Image (cartoon, rainbow, N blue to C red; front, top):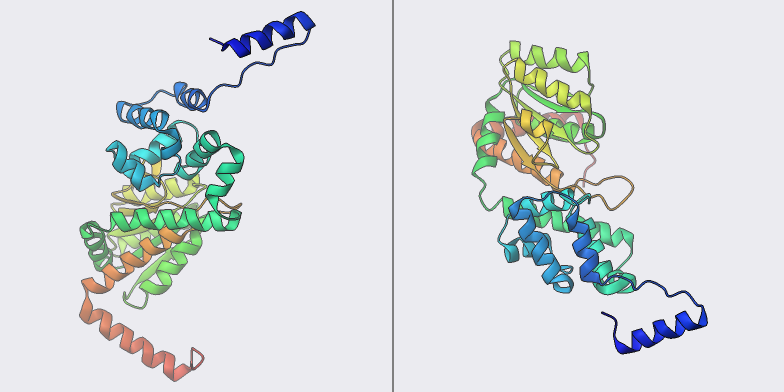
Amino acid sequence: MPSPQQARAQASAITSGRSVPAAEPSPTSQVRDLFDGPRLSPGQRRIAQYLIEHLTEASLLSITDLAERVGVSQPSVTRFAAAVGFSGYPALRERLQALALGPRGAAEVDRGNELQAAVDAEIENLENLRRDFADPDRVIEVGRALSESAPLTVLGLRISASLAEYFAYAARRVHPDVRPVTRGGSVAYDALLQSRETGGTWVLAFSMPRHAHETLMAVRVARGAGLKVALITDLALGPLADEADVVFATGTGSRLVFDSYAAPGVMAAALLQAMTDAGPERTQARLEEYEQVAERHQFFLRD
């Protein structure tokens, strides 16, 4: 119901022939509208209700803090953001800040330019990964399995090829037979089938946005051949995750034109660490041998 002042203004506008502009919905109403359309699970409705009831405060929370306030997991918050039409929680939070604080206030919250905002988003991804590492048993277990697989195949197609090359380059220092696969189609299928025929048991696959259909096909070929698949990706759910034996879901930086991969890079390094710890004697012997070769052939500049 309009206030007396609004009623008088509307009456004056009508008698003078002027149109009356429609009143803008309140920030709370606009947030409620964001969440009204999608079909949400009971847990997602809890998140939505908290955001509606604590809009200003909630718009400033990290994904970790919001998950704790609502009593859900961080992946649940990420899935909620996707369910209501956002690329991730940072994008949803930016929208909530714009509604709660106005465009000027939201810009001030960012405390910097778009490059700094991109770094802030990656810091949040790393903080989430740090929480995941509170229980390192799964990383240690998979690292041991990768270490024991001979050969070890590392799959990364299209944009994910750089992560696969990094992992394979480092893994060769501590593993006797590492085979990177960075081309899709029948080339990848041949490599995966040969890996299994020669005794391989595991594939480490990388899949970053945009997820390639040929990556899904290669993972299916690997599974069909009897290889187990450990997957490093940005989504805990979806066709690729459904096909993998183990999934390590890590956030990617999506604030710039091209994504950045701080958290997936650390995840890869953690698995490399687990591989070295799984076979310390082999690791030491191979590293010492490599250093001797590098010194003899002067691979690197002297400090």
